[in-house]
Structure formats: structure tokens, C-alpha cells
Length: 134
Image (cartoon, rainbow, N blue to C red; front, side):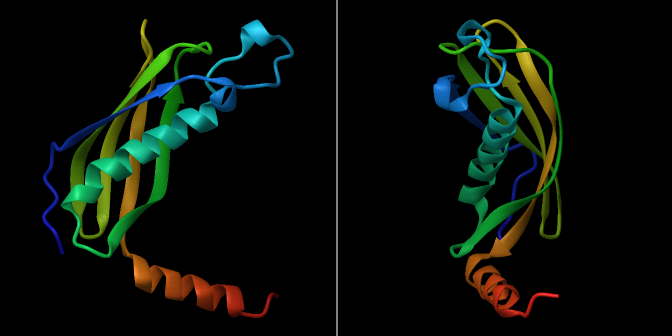
């Protein structure tokens, strides 16, 4: 298995648009980056941080998310997502995550991902799908 360096960092940016904003508050001016989108981009930043350190044919899947959404970010602002690898234990990779808009920190927490062999993972999923349902 590949060596994954503790302290490796990654970053991703997102312009908040209608597609990544809430739509249930009833007023266009109240639309902000949704919590599911914030978490999704935190996960993607973690994945992209680990991926260059993995052997060919391997990737990661999320196994745990523990984050707080601290502040709202309106449509039109850019959010920067940062991830740092804090620990590696076998196939498990731990990350510290943070999100900041142009004014303040909007999210922070931890995330864990598991390293998987993509072909073996797909085979296992196909077997699960083929099993009779209870």
C-alpha cells in the first residue's frame, strides 16, 4: 500500500450559485450555501488530497463526517475548502477540514475516509445488488 504523508494538505474553491444554495427559505436574498454542499465539498477536498498518494486502482470512500456549519455564505461569494491529513491507520485516513468564505470561517471539523481497491469494491457491490432482498 502507498505511503500517505501526515500533514499533506489540499484545497478547493467553490463559487456559491443557485445549484449549491438552499432553496427552502422562501426569499431569494436569503439563499446561502447549503450544509449538504459544504459537507460534500469538504469530502471531495479530502479525497483529492489523498488520491495522488494512492497506488493505481485505489481510491477512497467516506466513512465518517463530524463537522459544524458555523456561518452562512450567500450566493455569489467564493468558499475555500481546506483539508489536512492528520492520521493514517491501515486503510483509514483522518482529515481536519475547514471552509472559509471571503469574510470568515464557515465550517470546520474532521472527516475519515477508507482506502479501497476500486475493482474489488465494484465486485462486492455487484454481489450485494444481486442478493435477494429480505
